[in-house]
Length: 247
Image: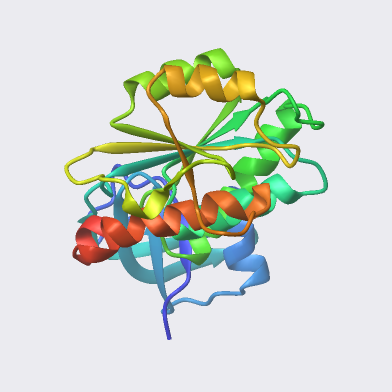
């Protein structure tokens, strides 16, 4: 059985040393999972470090893990960033969850013209919590960054800096699956709102260097388009490589 994974500070984690698991993670491990001394657990700092060990002491709301092994996982390549248009009804959280499981490295909330939802501190907290939970479930050593809100103008600047930038658009002539990404260190994908990207937004983003692409013959919802795009890109890059690169 695969050991459970928890978030912890691992800067001082060395074999034989105890590491404290506290806060929400400690409460979940000690009070919900009811882990007991001697059980195997894995820890990560979300920034590439993994530690394997056994539960030592257990107290209410926290426990310690005695480290047996510590490893550093290389950052995945290419780096994958998705600008996700804000949505209502939890659809943007669904997008964050599934994109995290597929391997996104950063999700940027985009306040597109046709977005009904608005970015708030609560949005940032919900997205971060959703991403964190999905990263643990998929056992990622590198956890995504959550940023926002981005304007169309700031998003255009990111498109200009990216190795490759793509705007998902149902009217695009070129499919994403035929694009060349070999040797690119980072990829930016722009996902519009349910109402679609305006012609003005499309012109600004493509004018900054982004390529308008389509995923297939059908039209996906905003909550699933980013995940589908990441799967296509990963199939062309990360999923063809070894586990140390694609982790």
